[in-house]
Image (cartoon, rainbow, N blue to C red; front, top):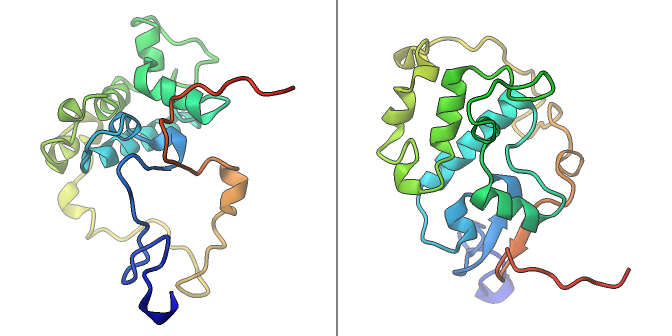
Length: 189
């Protein structure tokens, strides 16, 4: 702010939002259990988010959904993944996980371990890179091989290849300073 004041919602030097203990910031479907529980957390929350994104890329949907943020939070904390619910039974044709390979299921399951110390990647990215899902990836060549497609941008701020955020996830970004799992009393109507 003016006069040397620290901006209310960010650090003066970086614009990074300040976080108070207990604040929850993010899109509900991608938040790791330790964030929801108000526990100390580390880079392992990023491996959780990678698991959510991978599941969504493979199926078209995030693994934990609900009609409210609270329902999503409850499912993140306790709902089994679809193949765990089936107990090993084959997926039906209408199941979005039906086409997932055993390696993909294994990778997603390990990235979505609710205990961060048991989450794949806890001991470093090498754990993830060594997973059978990535067997055919030549990690030593990833940054050397030319990309298969390069978008044509007008300038470095061009976002024309993306939908506006509000069309993808309307009203899902949250900032909650209270317990996100608290039950709201029924309102009128």
